[in-house]
Length: 401
Image (cartoon, helix red, strand yellow):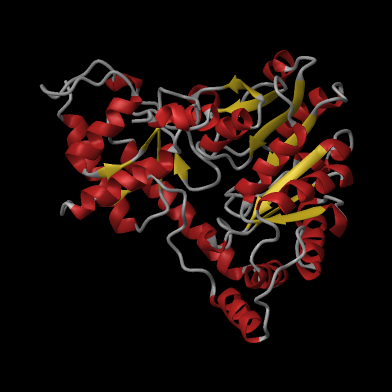
């Protein structure tokens, strides 16, 4: 019989499974066995999509928007995105510089496929979103981490960025607000990164701003708004987080025209255009009142404060004060080497498995995000679930000696 591993490509054999999706699967399996699992592993808002956006999709279906769309997006949506970039971000992307995709993840995949040759390097701020690393590798690139820990609010210094750039560096990739840490780079910090990158004209910037609307500071800063790097910045965004449209599969990017054209070429051979009625609804989302989005943001801020106050009561957890997204990323090294008499905790992977098996709370180990000393907790859940989950965690961690 043929060995299954010999049939599969080396590309997929060496591709890591998404840890967030893996933990979600484990949670479903334990629930099927009758356990009361609280999953805090997925980055998915628990709010419904606002009614006016759903109504727009329904109207689009009634109006016959059920056919193929232009690969780069419906004209009304690319125009709305162009105007949104100017209004909210001080970014000048014309509609022909916009590419609409089936989620921001596809935008990043398109970019890596369009820009990377084997051996090209991508500087990735760490901790990083799980898929950055694997998408870069899948595209033949070499991810180069620039790491900062909890004691620095997970913010690399401009000097670290400078040191990581080599003649093989193709682009720098980061998010703000950040997944998994909730870190937000302010104007001064973005200025520092822009000043470094201004000196390296061959290096492009990919700024993932999918959590833009879940920002608890008074200002969202897009690095592409700095004049010294505006012509080399690709800005990625989408509808999943700020509008609670995860299942609609709708993201977008603004880029220099030649890069937008290249990504359209890639997408044309992979998925073609995003769903027609999703795009019609997306155009309404960007041009309508953001009241529901702001209400969600405030709810997330309240949940963050609840989670942080409860985590402070658990000895050994060291958390930063996240200013965006809906994650907390505590350092858990204090528990390494401890045991409940059966399980010895060697790392964050062991700790997440222990919490899942003993407290039925799903978390994601920081090793998936480039920091094996932490775990990610998503507070995109109800206050009751969050309180119950953290109480369970506190009890389980209290058994470790």
